[in-house]
Image (cartoon, rainbow, N blue to C red; front, side):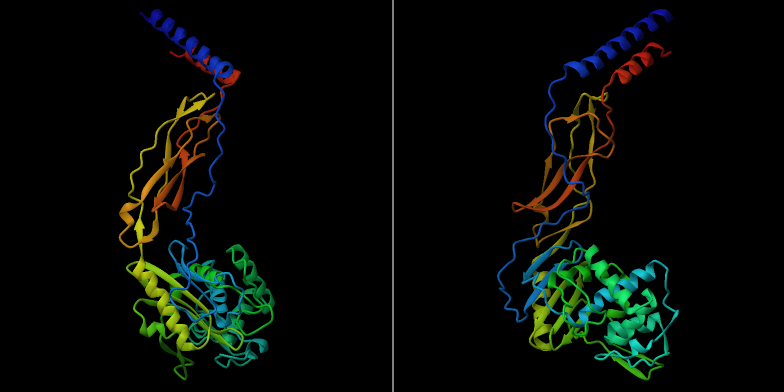
Length: 405
C-alpha cells in the first residue's frame, strides 16, 4: 500500500510539472492592463464651481468640508489676494506641529527680541527681554491676533524670523498651497505676501487636525499678565453662530476684511473662507451664508460598512492560478442630505492578471458613485502573491511532489 501511494504522488507531481511548463510555453496572450492610481486613500472629486447664488460681497470665498477636503461652494477660489492676519493660521500650524514633535512645550519660556517687540498692528506690547510661556503667546496670537507674539514664537522655533517664514513657505508647498507666498508670519501688508481662498481652506483644515487649537480659538474673552491685559476674540461668530469653533480673522488696508470661520455640527466641520470683504459686518454675513449653505445642503455618510463582493482573478503565467482581492473602504464621504443610501459601488477589475503578482498590489478600483459623480475611490489589492512560472519554479514543484512523504 505504501509503494502505491508514493507512485501515485510521483505521477501527480509529474503532471503538475507538465502543467507548469505548459503555462510557460502555451499560455494565451496576456491582456494589457493599466495599473490604477497608487494612492490608496479616498479621492474626493471637486464639483463644478457654481455661480455666486449666495450673493456674497467678498472678492473671493470658499466653503470646504474639513473631513473630506471637498469644496462645496467657491467664488474666485484661486485668485491671489492679501490675507492679513489669516496668515497666523500657518504660523499656528507650525507651532502646533513643533509642539507635537516634542521640540517645545507649552510651559517653556520664550524671550521677546527687539525685532518681535517692534511689530505694529495688533499686539500685546511685549518689551525686549520680556518672557512669556508658549501657552500665553499662543493665546495672544489666536485670541488677540498679536503680531509680536507670533514673531516671538517663530524666532523661538526657527532661530530667526526669516528662517521661520521659510518654514511657512516650505509647509505651504508641501500642502499644495500653490497660490501662496509668505513674507512674514503676522499678515502685515507686504508686497508679494499673497494667498487664495482655496489655500487658506487647506491650511485651516490642516490646523484643525490639532484639536488642542480649539482650546484657544473658542475663547471669547481672557486675560494675560495676571489679569492686567484683556483679550477679546475678533471672531464674533464664536459667540453668535451655532457650532462656531474658530478660526481667525484678519483686516488690513490692502486685504480688506477677511476670515476663515470654522463651525461643527453633528460631527461635520465646515470651513468658510472670506477674502476682501468691504467691511467687518459683511465679512461675518458672508461667512454665515456659506456655513448655513453647507449645513443645510450636506451630510457625511460613513461607507465603512458597505459590503462589496470581489471575485478571484485569474493569473496568466503564474504558479498560483488565481489571486483574491480586497479593498479597504473606510471613512466618510460628503453627500447631499438624504442621499447617502443612494451611493452605489462600481467595481473595476481586469479579466486576468499577468504574473508575477505581489501581495497588496493594486489590481483595480472601487468607485463610489452618486448621481453619476464619483465621490470616493479606493484601490482593490491582491490578497496573495503569484510568482511567474520559470524553469526553476517548475522543477521545484516537481521535486517537492516527488519526494513528499
